Length: 250
Image (cartoon, rainbow, N blue to C red; front, side, top):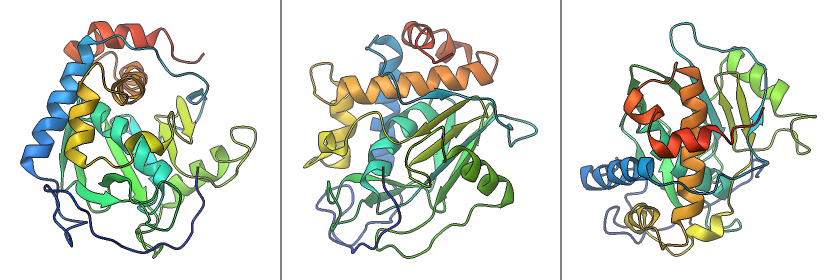
């Protein structure tokens, strides 16, 4: 978990996002790779992570569709790690527009972790709304501000007894039913890998990334399905998600 701190920029070193293009829209080739990884994960049973996702009873935020609320920052390496399985899970319910390349701070632990920025992106889904707040860029400068409803949820649930580090990020609020403060795995699993390598290796069963990333993505998906009346059916009734649903906290 992380709390707001200063950071500085650096080159990306990835063919999909050449030096100086951090913040550019993710390429269609990488989006295709992410979509393939997301779909492949529906057929794989992996051990579900325990102890991070919490069952809560909170306000739903949305009126028409369940709302997934994410609060993080571009500089934060733990947010960088959480975004990978979150993006894979969200792709099972909709599509991203203007998802952008990002790396975490070059002056924090797990420096320069390849990830995405949600700042300025749009998410389209028939099943879910996604509200993403990146409070600062990778240099620690302010970006997005939560509205009153989002801030009230953050202040209530990013505090004791839900976490022993009040105000920490990343913060993930799943339709008022589930909560995560922190990450399922540490960002060291992503170190030294490009965006394309992380996407591809998350799909490879023997990769060290595949188990942790896909396990988190499947658990998120099961939590989302519990809010959408198990729709879409091909996702929510897939073998991996039905198995993951058995491990949701009660």
